[in-house]
Length: 74
Image (cartoon, rainbow, N blue to C red):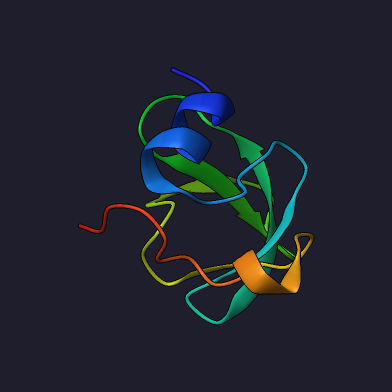
């Protein structure tokens, strides 16, 4: 699976290197190894797994799609 799968399945603008806010903390998507994304939070060395549509805000995208919720939710 890939970022393309995550984008299509969840209806979010996920992409590797994209800036996000996960659970209120800024970070960057490092990979999309399955039906989730890995996010390296600012100031951290390791990435954490995150659901693409749960507590995730996409910062590098069109304002109309910056909030997750257009696709499936947990």
